[in-house]
Image (cartoon, rainbow, N blue to C red; front, side, top):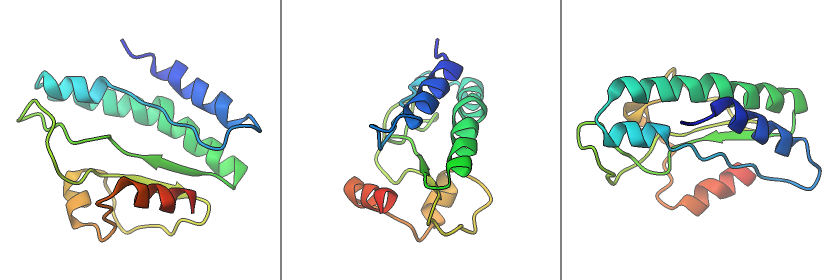
Length: 130
């Protein structure tokens, strides 16, 4: 039931306002698909998030030049478990002043191998807001 395009447009509209410094978009679809054990639905949700939300936001961030984009789940929900679990989550941080990483994919295996680990969320946000 998620209207990905509307969420993406709302985020773009918020970025265009002078009185807003941070935009957060929450999407439940991948989490719900994991609870149902449906890999196909999770893949579709992630692909739509990428094309209808992250892609347009990243294009706007590049156009503006002074913007950072963070993409991350709020917690792991492995399909095999069908429930929330503990552990590190993958994230992508890109934009103004962020050095490019060496990873070609975005998944849990990359998160486990990354030297960029934030056990406390506020430290990641400190990096984002840098």
